[in-house]
Image (cartoon, rainbow, N blue to C red; front, side, top):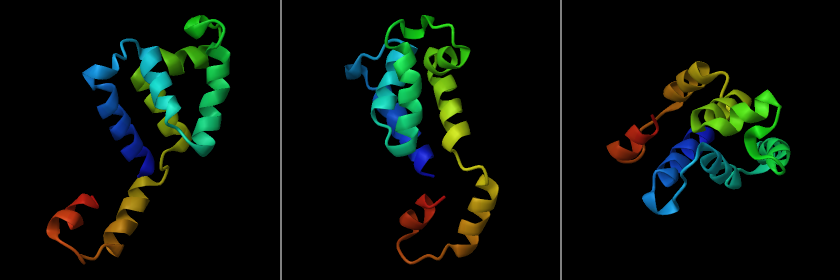
Length: 109
């Protein structure tokens, strides 16, 4: 769930016209700047390969990650997404109890 929130927040920021993130590479770099812990270490390993020659590197995986926002997002979800999403949602649904307003209750899902 944290990854989904992160990706939503970053997408909103990327779409902000004042940021002037015009290329997919810039958007991925911007998202990478906001990663923490294990995802940041994962990202840094690929970023170091782009430092000298941007995405003209011969490494296909590096080119894939930095060539589009969607490819970056897909790789990030593959690495750090919830693999048991359906099971997690089902468990949360059974554990869900309305203790606050209906709006707060609705935002859980």
